[in-house]
Length: 210
Ligand code: ATP
Image 1 (tube, rainbow, N blue to C red):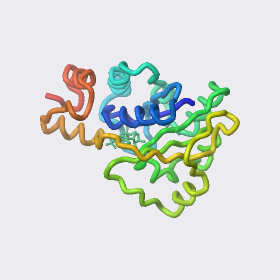
Image 2: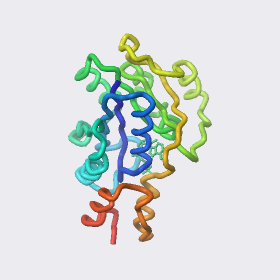
Image 3: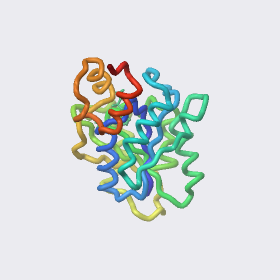
């Protein structure tokens, strides 16, 4: 099983790493591929360049043997749609079971994603609860979850896509917004992200670090 984990990672923090570790632990994933977004269609533009976000991500995942990065989306000039990214990986890795990883805040808005109904044609979804985010889903998203929810994901690839697993687990309550605010306020970052990432922020004055 291979996890595909998209995000802005602006910057990467212990919430992202905690989510990936929780999935790894619970699903015994072979690999988790972090896919930084190039040109996020649904949100404000990132605060630093794609190169900077990738550099920080590379430093953050360095200690983990089976975490890796795909620059597929940041290398594209056009907006990146998750469904296209999944189709790409499904084609590249035809013998693997893919699961798309996300936090519950992202899942709440899944019905706004491009061609969201077809996401499950390529992968399972693993939704990790995000501390402080209530699971009050719209009727449309709740119905989608009801139709596809399973209590565990099947190991054999016979059923290689189409299910949603809700993983209730403790992931540190950190957000990139909180990190950027902490930098602005000159606060310590050691409880929010790894030292290697902080070092890059410091030496490159990312996010106006002083
Ligand atoms: P921002 O504060 O800028 O909105 P963010 O912290 O939500 O950023 P993203 O890179 O947008 O970070 O998140 C990528 C994915 O990681 C999303 O699916 C999001 O739900 C998930 N995620 C991020 N932080 C956490 C966390 N602390 N707990 C659970 N999921 C998280």
